[in-house]
Length: 329
Image (cartoon, rainbow, N blue to C red; front, side):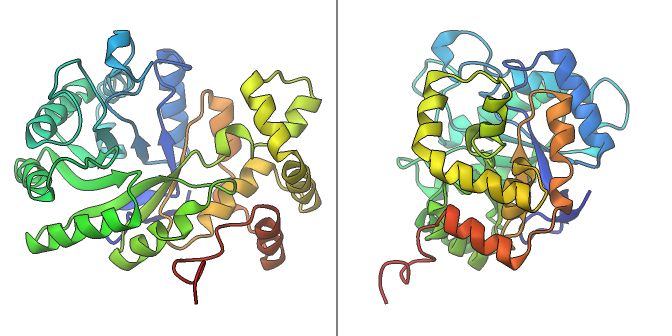
């Protein structure tokens, strides 16, 4: 496994991060344990979760939310020394109850959410505490004050964001700098060959501030994992997926043909393309089975030539570069 710094921090993390959104939902606890065992054995040391993961991400469903953290917590407690083997990352923002203060990023919510996640994870500290979305109604002075307090208490070590726009990243860092606080070290964004909007402004902002990118949905919801091959092999798909496949069929055919030409699996190519970006720290994979995890482990070692990268850009064009040159002189 390859390792790199989490953004500009001194923390070393694996180039693949284990995403655990499926734990407790599509993946049962026993299988989740096996996946975590296999991940550590393979050298993956960054585990990513969120307080809402584990089922329908809505508190009125009364099922599942918090379960992913609980499963990780039970796994961490199973044997001595496990906690020191992994960098635990979780998130807050989404509703964890039906009360008016059970969501978003008020100082009140941040304190309560962190303490609840610590209980579910059965640990005394969270290594990377991530804001799952921007809160447009809470001032940064309040957010950073709450995060600073958690750092002072030893309950969190680093702070990250998720789904932030470029200007929001800049605003957050400006406010943190005025408080002599480190601010963000990572940002989780939707990024893959089919979704390249963040190349316009978010990626330039991350590069400028030394914030590591952690892409989620690196395989485009399965589109980039050889979906046409799987259908030809008898794999069933949902009506929604079939509709998406037809929308992208021409590109998918060209993509899978290119992967065959260079003798690489489509999923490996999609992940390797992401890892080629110097702003990227690690890509978040979300295996539902040990076999899926195993198949993704080769991606960091896959080498894509300049010609292959050029052809991928032709098949899956981005927004035209970075702003403003993407749309102006």
